[in-house]
View 1: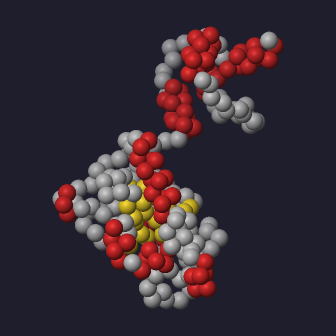
View 2 (view 1 turned 45 degrees about the vertical axis):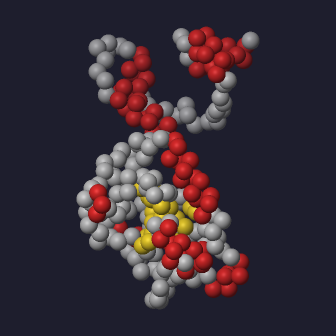
View 3 (view 1 turned 45 degrees about the horizontal axis):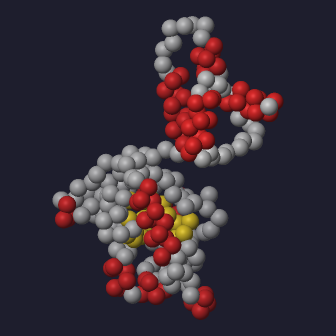
Length: 239
């Protein structure tokens, strides 16, 4: 559960930060991915690396902005497509309660924790999230490269499909599951028997990650193509 509690009492204007005595500190944007997730219509499976660079650059630029000045200036808000999420918008593909990975006390308290969006750029989609009650952090909940959160009238309120982009570990687990589901005609197959025993306790230890230069990598692949990782490491230690 969240370590911070909702503001008690009625908030008169949720569009204005409650910076109090911190106004003299010129509180600037700070971001958290604590509540980030992918979901249907908000997946990143088809997005190329340049888009992620654009997102990072956008967060960097906003990190230089004074929050109070930003929110009070309607022209700045409009130019950044910054506005509260309209959960009753035409053909919106998600409901607030569908965002199950965010703490229940936040999801059920729309008055104190309204969700907002701002643009990555005009054609590159939106970032969606909510403010911590003291405006010290903007919690990013969804990334919306397809503009699905607020379907546009200009495009006949169309919502585009997306797919979930797995991390490398998740992708590896999926591939292992697919292999385990493949029928093996050899009932005595040793590899098959080991796959059936997964997961084991072998992974409960330290690991080392490294990268090789392109030239050495090609040579490395050729020399080690018929060897297991264990054989490679043991051979290296012995020699």
